[in-house]
Image 1 (cartoon, rainbow, N blue to C red):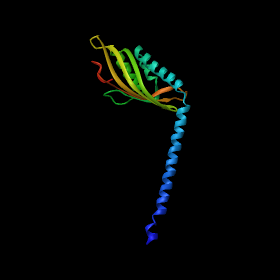
Image 2: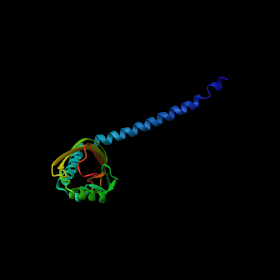
Image 3: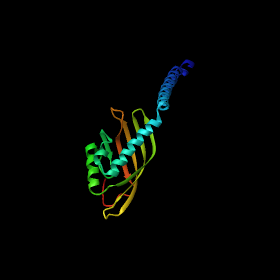
Image 4: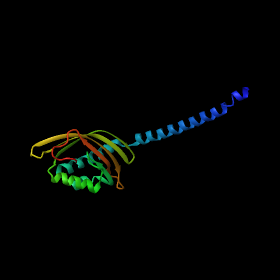
Amino acid sequence: MIARRWAWLPAAALVLVAACAQQDAAYEEAEAVAEDVMEMDYAAFEAELDGLQAAYIAGYDAGDAAALAGLFADDGMMSPPMSPALDKASIEAMYGEMFAAGATGSLEIMRESYMVKGDKAVGWGSFAVTMMGPEGEPFTTTGRYGSVMMKDADGAWKLYRHMFNYEVPPPGFGAM
């Protein structure tokens, strides 16, 4: 009877050993990620991200749809408000239509945070854009964005996924 009462003990010991082994593996994986993060040159990444952001602002302010689309990876996509996801060719077409309709102006991007691991990064923040409204009056709108970036084969950061929304949509321009 006593032997039967304690028959579960070897099985419990095996479960405990297995759980400890899984915990050790998880700890080792977390330690490896921490080492990657500590070895990263954040100053270099921020400089590269600043360059990507400056190129986006310059393309927008110049009304250059091709330059904006060129900042996306070949398989990059953008999800504008009230619109299906757009591939790279559609991104260029959307910006071209926007700029042709007069939606040019001055863009400001306020990066709030980012995370990076190797050749992938995610960032988010807010933006403000001042443009001319349909009646020719200046209009400023603000919004939020989120982006996933990846390094291309040449080591340049490209937008892989990008989405944004408006707090107040620009008048007369519909979905952008």
